[in-house]
Length: 303
Image (cartoon, rainbow, N blue to C red):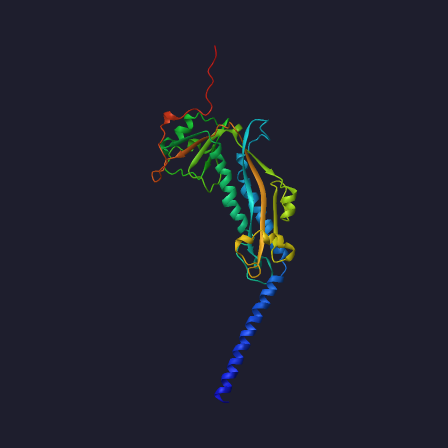
């Protein structure tokens, strides 16, 4: 065979391989585009997300006020919500590349960034007084508040008790709650001034708009998975038009875990914040024990 013919044959072979490769890639993309959502993977996402949110909210049950309402007293409220996000469609179809933690990644984000951030931060907004104490003065400071275990409660967030020798005096009276934003802080308040955590129903129109189904009746948790490659869901794609995503090539689903938890405080709740001094941080002027006022001032006897 002549060199010229061999050269032509190689050129044809190369072109054939290129065409074949393009055809295979198109077939794969078409298969991904038209692939149905795997029901089991969708169910795993909804149920595992619900379980994670329920567990996270349950960790705050011990700061729930025993009263159902504050009987018309002025209140202040702070809301904690779920969220929605985009994820690769291939994580929720059969026979494609598996995605690690696709069924829990959204709920983990909600727990860390929403629940464990905003509920603890509501204490900061409700507090009436703040003290900065040395470690050696922490327990004495709580005692100078006139702490009464029958009447009052101590709520702690990311507390470092190393070096506090007398901490055992108050340890059994402390409620620890998780927090991603508050560290080494105590809040002391009457039990009657603890907040009420209300789990609210979502508006019906919002449920319909985002195709939300109820996942947990007690905590009012809703969820949905919407395939954005389907033309029937084009209105949902349009909401993401400013995200610089080409939905024709970057196949996505919209994941939603929705809830509204309202943290309701009495407007006059007597919340005292105690920060522990950290020599490595600028925290302001350290208080002396003589600066501390009683949590509930004693009434003077009238003769």
